[in-house]
Image (cartoon, rainbow, N blue to C red):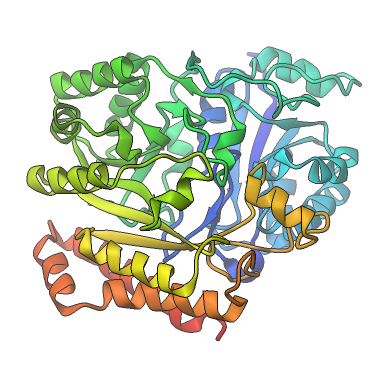
Length: 469
């Protein structure tokens, strides 16, 4: 029997144990106590499962120190390591990578993450790594193994090329990969705030985003989708593992429409009875489509509202209609799908009054949840470019993040301290309403659902009250 080469995925430790999700397309910090799976590792577990013996060291979930992580890796003795690094805490991640490269020299190291949209970050890591993974589902496992063995710096399909983020099309392209090795990611420390069940796993029906909102990292990526039946196979496999909850990690669920409708109809026909949630672009709203989503098991969607003043968003290539947003939310309430609205605080066009009006708007929309995010200079975004041009970011990201834990980007007239206070007041103003809390309790489906919601509520406000004043 041929012995498979060993490959280890590594999610590095974070400063103060902060719960970051490290992904190529959308890296973020938990607003509460939840922890999301790295979808890129999930995809790679499918791409590589037939050719490698795969293990996973998740220092965030397991709360491992840097030395604990190195010790585990030494015990596994992998031939290849794939390490996730992200822009928001790049200094921390780069320090870990440097230590890893020095402490364990038996493996070829590859990296992935949103940090490598930025050329400065690429230059820093290049002497330490064999390659940078940009599109995990396009990797050919045999080519990947040969690349790791050969003394070459030439990129293969799936690894970063010099013009990776300059020449691509947004037209949908189909891409397939085998069902991921989901059992690798079955751990209690992964939680999703909108879940109805304690254990959950993540599924990807698409990768990238068909839209080009310039304040978002996803504007830098091409768009790929998976054939409907392959995604249904993932759901079936997850159900066989005893898991009832799925988070579909698409950045804009529902595109291409024909493929998505086929996927939803197959879920309904197979009667898998899975519970799931996803991110949804309001422009995709059609009553018949929402009906299909509900019948297929969808219970919650997240939509990007961002601000009440939709004219601000037009400057960044995002075109929304106020009536569409309201009609979508109203219809979701009618059929029993809950809605979380994402909001951004800190656009240079915003003043304090506009931000307060946006918070009021969030309540008027009668959203079930609201996520208030401080504007961050995401890799590849126009916000990042402006911050660099104004000298607010010199080389790598100085720790700016949507929670303001590491720093807050100030592009307009509102100070850093005031932006932080506005964000924290928004959270308290939205969630600490007696009528709102009563309605949330009345929607609880089970004891497990109650405990998940209660823990997230406590974690959310712990972060709010512990944030810098």
